[in-house]
Figure 1 (cartoon, rainbow, N blue to C red):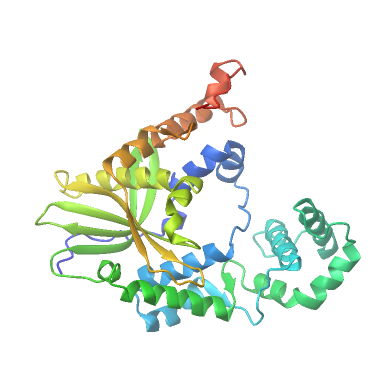
Figure 2 (tube, helix red, strand yellow; figure 1 turned 30 degrees about the vertical axis):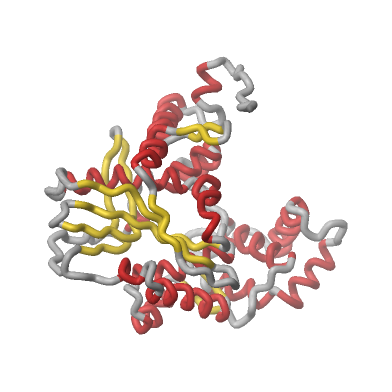
Length: 357
C-alpha cells in the first residue's frame, strides 16, 4: 500500500486549538468551558469504567495497530495496572473525588498545597452531596477508606497522568479489541490493503471561520481509484444495539460534523479537493457480558447536514457545529460566558418550547 501522505509529527494534546469535545462542553456548560479553556482550570477525572475500556481498546487497535507485543511494550506510556481491584462501592467514588482534589492542589513542582485531612473532608462532603454515605459520619468514611481504598489511592497518586486500571479490566479490553479484529463485520476495517491508504489516530490542524481547530480521526481510509475518503470513529458501549440514544446523549452528532469539516479542509490541502468524503461511520463494540457482535453505524448526508446546521428531534432542538461556533465567537467578543446569545438577544425573556403533540 502506497503511503502518499506524510503523517504530521505533532503532539495532538499539546496543540492549542478548538476540538469537538470542547464544542460539546460549551454546548452543555459554557461556564465550565470558560473555566477549563480560558482560565486553565484542571478538568475533573471522568474515567468511568466504560470510558477506560474504550481508551484501552482504542489504544490497542489504533495506536498499536492491533499488535499485542507493541501494546505490552508501550503500555506504560498511558496506563498502569493496579494491584487492587477497584470496586463499585461508595468508598471508591469518594476516593476518585479525593484524587481529583489532590491533583487540583498539586503545583508544578509536585507539592500538595493542602493537608490530607482538608482534602478528605471536602471529598466526603462532595460524596454526600452526590448521595453517598447518607447519614454517615466522616470518621467512619475514613475507616472505610483506610481499610478498602487506601492502596488504590496510593497507586493513583504514584501514577499521576496515567490511567490506573485493574488486571481484569485490561483482560476485558483486550478481549473486545481482538473481537473487533476477528469478527467478519469489522475485521477488514483494521487491515491494510492494496486498494486503500489507511491512517489511524490521524491529527489534523485546520481553521474554520477564523478559529484554530484540531481533530484526531480514529481511522481514515482513502480509495484513490474511487476518489472517496472514508471516516471511522471507534466507540464502546454497554448496549451497542441502542447506539442512537448514545449518539444524541453524548453529542456524537457534533463530532460527526466537526470531523467531516476537518477532513474536507485537509483533503483540499493535500490535492484531494475533488474527492467525495463519505459521512462518518461509527464502529461500536459491546462491553456487556453478552458480548454482542460489533455494529457499524453509518451516518447519512442528512445526518451530516443536521450535525452542522442543527436539528429538532422529538420536540427538542439540538445546536449544530455552526451555531455552537457562532456562540463561542460571540462569547469571546462580549466576554459573556454565563448567558447564551439567545437569552442576551431577548433581554432574558424566552418563550417555552415544549413541542406538544
